[in-house]
Structure formats: structure tokens, C-alpha cells
Length: 199
Image 1 (cartoon, helix red, strand yellow):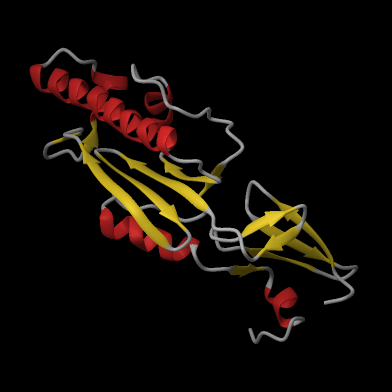
Image 2: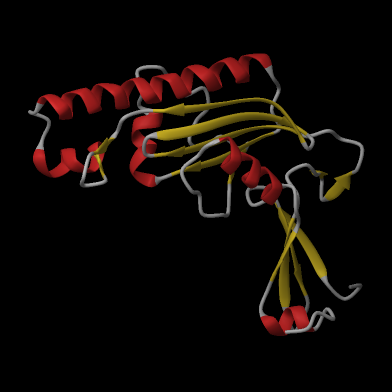
């Protein structure tokens, strides 16, 4: 490994290793703190996890590998029989029917409740990272809610979780925690083979 140059990417929480022939990445566990390119083995990372999909969200407070607090929120946002989000339906059909108005009202309350919850956590804790996963169509509704989101879209603590998210619940959140607690070696078959891994 002595012939590799290493660089740390804070946004993706990973090291990039390169030499003249190849490169690979090492995604670090979220529980590891990096200071000026060096791992701090004694630091206890505290982070907020926020998972948002249509109709459900999970919020958790973690310190190291321990879940200190969690909450699952849900809302009636999907149109029966069609399985279509009310937000997507609004783009084409409007919001004139009573059912649509009910779903829209519950959608607005849903995002207000999410922001109220994470606002409390951010007031009570000093977070190193915000592990975040939210579908693109929901982002404007989260950040433009009547209850303001307590962090900016470009907050440097945000760590976009590099994994597909199923409908959030407590089990899904713990599964995401297990994923974030592990390291991941990323590279081409050739680059990994050069490190001694078989194809």
C-alpha cells in the first residue's frame, strides 16, 4: 500500500487510494471520525438519521453503534387502488376532490411533524453528521414546510446514504444503521484483484 496516495472525501466519508496503475475507494463506517486525514480512534461520533419516503419517515439519534432514540412517522399520502402518491397526482389532476384535499392536508402535517422532531433533536444534541435519505420528489416539501427544517440542504454535516431505501420503519432504520456501521471497499475487479481479492 506504500505506493498508493490517499485522499479523504468528507461528503462521501471515504478514502480514495490511487497509484499509477489503478484506484479504489474505502467507504468508512459512520462511527469513525477523520481529522485532517487521520482516523481518530477515541472519538465517539454522534449522528442523526433521517429517512423519508412517501407516507413514512424514520428519525433516529445514534451515538457510536447505540440507538439512543427513534421515532417512526406515517401519513395517508397514497391514493387507494392506484398506489400513487398524492403529490404526484397533483401534477396532473389537481386537488379538487375531498379525498385529495384530505391527503394533501395530511401530507403537509407529515412534513411539519418530521421537522418538529428533528428540530428537537438538533436543539438537544451536537451532531457530527446527518445521515440522510429522501426521495427527490419529497425534498421541496420537506425543506419548504411551514415548520422550517433545522438544517440547510447544503449543510456540511449531511451524509447522503449510498443505499436504496425501502419504506422507512424501525427495522429498516436499524438495517440502514448496520450498513452505515460497516466499511465498504469499492473498485473495479482489476483494482481489487491487485489488493489480493479474488474476482
